[in-house]
Image (cartoon, rainbow, N blue to C red; front, side, top):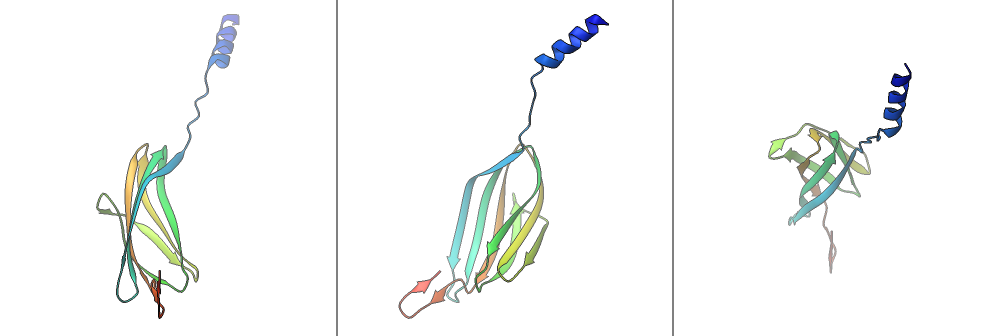
Length: 126
């Protein structure tokens, strides 16, 4: 019994705790904007996420200021992803779903912002 207790205590105090840190970062982002003559803007966002541990969804808010968003798609590796979207007076919200564990994934969002360009007499404002 005494040998078991000593062995247990040695094991207990010599064990190094292993803490897994669930985290993600975005090491790369590319956002392309194409301004149209009608004042709208076609937006394509490509964001590469680097995941530590397991993740299943991400989300994004896009603030609105008298603009309207027409959401077209979200993909990863050219595969369409399932998503939920909602709209309030001041923001557009999208949440998309995937599976990632200790890896990198690139997501591509595509949408149009109507009335993104305001033309004044001497200047245009984006």
